[in-house]
Length: 257
Image (cartoon, rainbow, N blue to C red; front, side, top):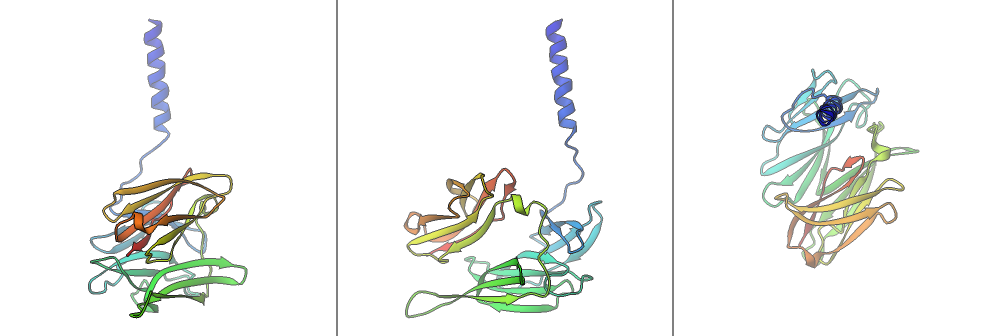
């Protein structure tokens, strides 16, 4: 009898713990959360097949919906959705679209769009773009590369001043950050750049485009970059991310030639 009572108590306790996690809704698409300049938080969902991005309010009603234009033979990656970063009008949403060749994943260009579809800025040959808040305003770094028939790819970075500020997610200070890879493309040695919150450990994972795990490494906050021999990887496109107790970063692509 005592055993039965004990088991019943355990079941009730287990059920109580589980009930604290309450399902709300299931969205179709790849989701995350963004923060607007006024502090409002929105769900961001992208449906890859339709190339459609929808922003939902926290009560799950639709806030904004737009479809980034597709370039011929390309696929688009959407980032830096904001209402007051690329212009000073908080009534409209702007975003950065990074375009890649559909066949081999080679970066083509990056374009800043308004939600109306108007182009605000175009960055040709841009293989990666980063935005940071600084004491002198928001800065956008655009990494570019021009093919050189007589040698390796020429790489350079242009810095742009932005009129607004990047609204950071609430968990940004506690989350790991993946910056990118250099050189990219790589031939012999590549460095995967990341930042782990102070005092924390994490796991850096490398995947191929099929989602297969290629390599896994334990990392911490002391280094900030992991070197890999390009000869250990087959030529192709790879993605890496970092997982800590705060979650997993968005993946960054790099190319081995």
